[in-house]
Length: 638
Image 1 (cartoon, rainbow, N blue to C red):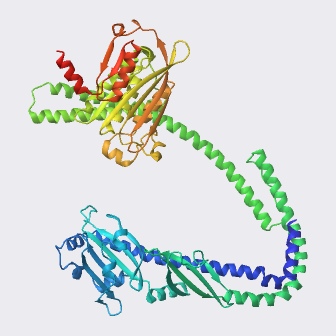
Image 2: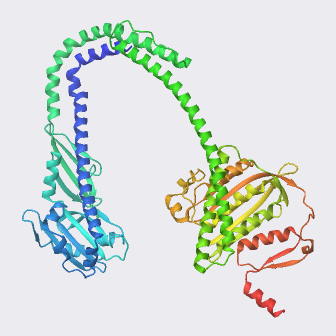
């Protein structure tokens, strides 16, 4: 089939060469010329954009000089002469520089002539254009740089502007520096030399552009010149900056001449080449390639890397391909053996590493406990104020180090599959409240409230590993308190009955803290990972806490999840199947049945939780919003 198509192609090429040159081949050349013109147009756009960006960068750099800030504040009169010269303008492609104070006063307006290398008077049209209500300054943000194209007087200018701030980027802002470069004949001449094309720039008002200007418009009616008209940019006033490029068409003229010369030779040789190719390609190329492809497909289906292709009887390109394929199959076989060995070695190394970490962390924890114990004994002796301060610092540092060591020990035990759970009957509500009570001191001196809400249907006694459950709770509540500056942290405990003697306990820790970005949630539970580097610098931590907490929950047969939004807090929750144990004294608070209880608490969350608990005990709960009025009423009644 391939040889037949090849012969037909040669025949059509020989018989239709001239017509192809006038139609398809001519169109192909025209497309190539248009692509070349479009490439030049993109280069022109990039040149204009590069000029704007260069001006913006130069303005932003000068705007960070302390001398510029002092100059606009009126404290450095000789600033311009000491820092700006005509050569500075020429080197940075600046025609006009303007310095405007924060209240709109034009401190300096200078134009440099690159030929005579001295400063000249700037166009007076710059003065109204740089007024506070003008398009440039009103468009520029209070603390951000800007760039663009603007019409000033009768000329078009590319500009870059930036606020003048301290070197460290902080305020207060002293004003604005604006740098301009003319897009007139000089720039157009430079652009024409760079693009090897005639370049003309003009502007059209918004809505006045004729059809085809918004998109590139070609004119190839002249066989020697190809013209392209396109919109290169948009000015600050909303006008379209239209550029027209004119390039020669040597390829088109040469293609026409070549087509005429090749016509008769292609007709004479096309059929002969096709016949010769039919015999040669079929016997020496196509048939061996078909056999090799079929053999490779057979090897692929069998999945046997030890299989090989049959040697080719000719020492030609096909024979080289066969030898290369056999060599590749041999290397694949060797690579598979090496990969299997490397995989086994990596698994063994990971196991040895985990066991080593577990032993090392355990050995380090023993002397650390000794340091803590001796520090506590030392604190009970008579110490000076300075000695006691030093002793407290040592004690806190040792506790922090012990916490890190415990995290590493737990993580290494989990990795080495050596962590064993020890279930026991525990009062779930008391365990949660105790964990929160231990961490409640972290809210001292902060506008932060820690609330524990245990729903009435939570069973009193459950069978669970209390140490590991407390570890998970302490981690989640501690994280919520650490990342929440103000508001509240609410720990909610609920339960759903399952089969007889079983329940699904749901624990959620919600905070009003900083939240977590969506991209950081994907790696949140990975070992040694935190939301970002700034979190570690600001709040500390090893990045193991959440990873250990999730693995502990999964070891206990549960699952953990998180919902968060930056700036609006986070909710960490986990569900845990537990065995329910019968509790003595069922039916709590019998004395509350039938009573009406007034609830006065400024926290809406606390009022809702308390009302639900009282309702479960048979009492009528009436929330009171005005706490001060209730206090006056109780005081009046004695």
